[in-house]
Image (cartoon, one colour):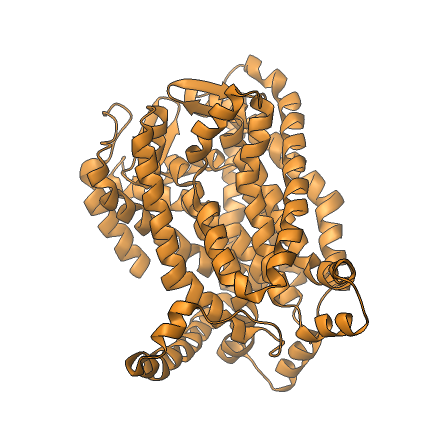
Amino acid sequence: MAALAGLTALAFFASASLRPHDAPALELRPALLPAYLALSLLRLAAAYALALLAALAIGHAAARSVAARRVILPVLDVLQSVPILGFFPVAVAFFIRVTAGSALGVEAAAVFLIFTCMFWNLAFGVYESLATLPEDIALAARQLGLRGASRWSRLVLPAVFPNLVYNSLLSWANGFYFLIASEIIAVGPARYTLPGLGSYLAQSVVAGRYEQTAAALLCLVAVTAAMHLLVWGPLETYAERFHFDESGDRPQVPRVARVLMRSRLVRALIGRVVVPGSEAAFRFAGRALDAVASRRALQAVLVLPLVALGVLAARHAWRTFAEAPLSPALAGLPVDLVLSLLRVGFGVGASALLAVPLAALVASRPAWRGPSLAVIQIAASVPAAAFFPLIVALVARGLGLEGAALLLSLTTMFWYVLFNVMGAAAAIPREMNEAARSLGLSRLGRLRHVFLPAVLPGLVTGCLTAWGAGWNAMILCEYLVVDGRTYAVRGIGAALDRATYETADPQVIAASLALMIAMIVGVNRAFWAPLYQRVTTRYKLDA
C-alpha cells in the first residue's frame, strides 16, 4: 500500500513535467536537483519494496522445492541477463499503452524497469542463504516443529537477513546505476523523459554541460552517504546478530552510534521502541510471507508472470519476423555476440581477481568494514554516464575504444562480486581463523586454506550475478554518446542500442535478445550450474 501511495503521488507531481518524444529537453537548472532527486528516490523505493517481496517468495520457493528450483533458477538466470532495453517493449506495451501514455503509466513502466535491475541478486541471495543453511540448524527447526509464520520469523528471515542487507546495498546501487535508462524510456522515435536525477545526468552529459553533471554527482554522493549512515549502516550492524557463529569477528559499532548511545533518550528509544519494533516486524513479516509465499497456489501466481513474460516475448518475436522482410543488420549479430561474450568473460575474471584480495584485506580488519562499505556503495551507485567524460578523455590519451569498453564494464560487474564475497567473509567463524593461526599458517596460507574455501559460495554467486549484469551493462559500455558525439565498439550491446534508439528495428532487437538468451542458457548449463552445485555442497559452513 505504501508503494502504491508513493507511486500515485509520484505520478501526480511528475505529470506536469512528463516529456513525450516531441517535447523540449528537461530543465537543467541546479535549483531543481532536490525535486528531481526526490522523484528518483520514490521510484527506487517503490521498485525495491516490490523486489524484496518477490525475492523472498521466489528464493524461498526455489530453496524448498526441487521442482520449483528447476523452473525458477533457469528463468532467473535468463531474465537477469536480459539488458534493460529488452524490457522496454514490455514496459511500453503494457504500462504506457494501457494508460494511453498517462503519467501513471510511464511512472509504472519506470518502476518496472528499476525492478528488473534490483530483483535478481536479491532472489539469488535468498536462495543461496537457504541452500547453504547448516544442517543442524535446519534439523533443530524440524524437531522443534517450526511451521508457517513461526518458521519464517524464527528461521528463514534470520537466515537470509545478513545476505539480504549486502544484496540490498548492491540492488540500491544498481538502481542508481541504471536510473538513466529507466527515466528515459525510448523505442525508436518515441521517447518519454521522466523528471529525475538519472534523466538530469543523461541530458547534462549529452549536452556537454559538465558543471551540471558535477552538481548532480555531488547530490548523488551526498544522498548515498546519508543513506549509508542512517539506513544501511545500522541495518548492517543489526544483521550481525543473525550470523550463526555468535563468537565471530564482527565490526565495531560505528562511531556515530557510540556517541548517540551515550544519550539516555537514545538508549531508551532503542530499548523500548527499536528492539521491540524489530521483533514485531519480524513476526508481522513472518505472518505476511507465510500467507503469500508458503502456499503453492500463490507461489505459482508469483512465478506465472515470469513464464507469461517469456510466452509474450516469443509471440512478439514470431510476429516481428513473420510480418516483415528480414533486416540486413541480422547477418552481423553472431560476430557481435562473440565479441560481447569476450568482454563479459574478461569482466567476470577481472572482477574476481580484484574482489577476493580486497575483501580479504577488509575482513582481516573488522574496523574497516563499515567505512569501506560506505565508500563501496557510493562508488557502485555512480551511474555509468558519469564516467563517460572520463572515458572519452582516456580514449583521447590513447586508451582506445576497446579498452574504454572493458574499463566501463568493470564499473558494473565488480561490485556484484565484491559485495557477495564481503558478505560471505563476514560469516566466517572466528574459530576457523584461530585454528589456522594456532597451526602456524602464514597469511597466504590462511587466505588459501580458510578464506577462499569459506567465501567460494559467495564468490560463485557474485560471479554468476556479475555474468548476468555484464550482458546488461553492454548497452552502456559499447555505445556512448557524449557532447553530441557517438563512441561505439562492435558488440551485441551496441547493436541493441542502435536498433532501439536509432533505427527502431524490432527484428534486430528480438534477434539480439534471442542470441543472448541462447548463449546465457548454454553457458549456465555447461558451466555455472555444475560449479554452483559443487561449491554450495562441498564448501557449506556447518555451525
